Length: 371
Image (cartoon, rainbow, N blue to C red):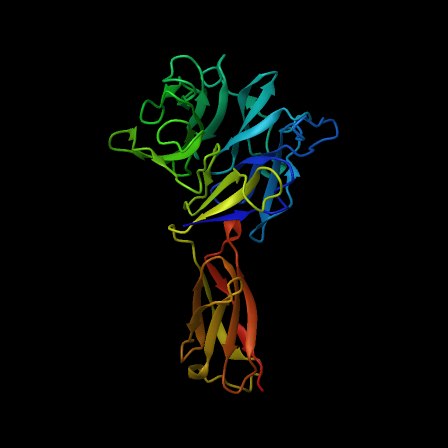
């Protein structure tokens, strides 16, 4: 079961918003948008503007309003696209247009200053052909990229180039028939742990046009295993490209045209329900606000309700001797209500944050007022 969450107007616009990338801890989102990005951009005949890279940082578990990432990444004329991001979020791959073609560049994080000026990758990655998309491993040791250079299996193929001891990128290796077909393969995305490759293909068992596929790496054989179609509703009869997953694989980011969107491609966060969420442990002590009063802990009853569904998530009892309680919750919004003999009813809203704001433990002591 999948759940699609439109990231809303803080991220999406009435224009095309596409190719989202997040680091494994989901602390920020970078993506491309064809909304107005700078005063010197001219609107195209399709109503869109040239592509510009935007960034949205996470605060208190939510994406803040997206902003143009700015110089030195943005060149001011819509000539760039973000095409990859390392799992650690410290290396960004960009595609800079030069007339009808372009090359792949890499920028690195520079502390609180953002990202450095992007540097073009060497000739083992960039060629006289078209290099379209790329992905870099979390440790920065390998780049997977799509290219239509001669010598492939047909159309666009996916290659890997590994870093050499001298810091340059080594000769490209075609990933072979396990991944590539006689048709086009594009938009490789290596998982944060380097063990799974997500990519788009017009071959394999495509539903029509590009579909998104997954292959796992077999460390025993040093080959990519059976390619699996991600299936509907990730894939549709339209072109589907560029799925990016979080560290534990529960959340993915994708751009799509879906009912209820903002008018063009929007960015969605997809929840894979078959992957367990991370849980926060809410713990604390229950005491009387008046030091002269005592709480009879066996008479205390706690109810937690999901604020979105209004369904009871669980009922809990504190330790009958110490009054300490433990509640384990996945990310979400909840209402905690507490009843105790001789005290006023107590209620409090609890927000269990996710993304980079996730906390494994939350301390919350409760003071009860006597009737």
